[in-house]
Amino acid sequence: MKLKALAVIAALACGAVYAQNIEVRDAWVRASVPGQKATGAFMKIKAKDTVRLVGVASPAAAVAEVHEMKMQGDVMTMRAVSGGLEIAAGKTVELAPGGYHLMLMDLKAPLLKDGSVPLTLVFKDAKGVESRMELKVPVTAMATGMHQH
Image (cartoon, rainbow, N blue to C red; front, side, top):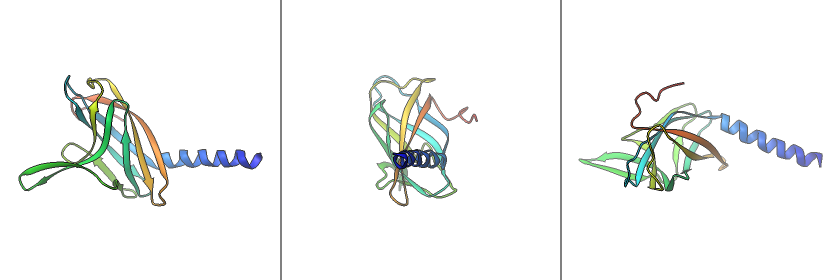
């Protein structure tokens, strides 16, 4: 009985420590208008140890994916990132308009400025262990003014 309780405590402690190894800053979701079915979420992610951002979910959208936007010649393309986005140890990866971002698609309702959106980020470490980070992200028209600490 005592060993089982210690195992549960150890598992909870590992989850908490792991979450503390990943830092998310300056997160925001772009406001949408009625009829708009998709929007982006943006943030800065830093990890103590190398991890991959392998998934995202939100009750506000039927589909949520990690995407990359880039120029190929004169054409801007956007696609889901296969295999996840690497967050190298000690480095900050910025999810920003025009680059890597989280795409929220098939929105269930417009996301209104000054509201907030729950997001769940799913990370996988080098050993393949998954962890989740729950966020409540503010909805804004743009990144300006979102750099409050």
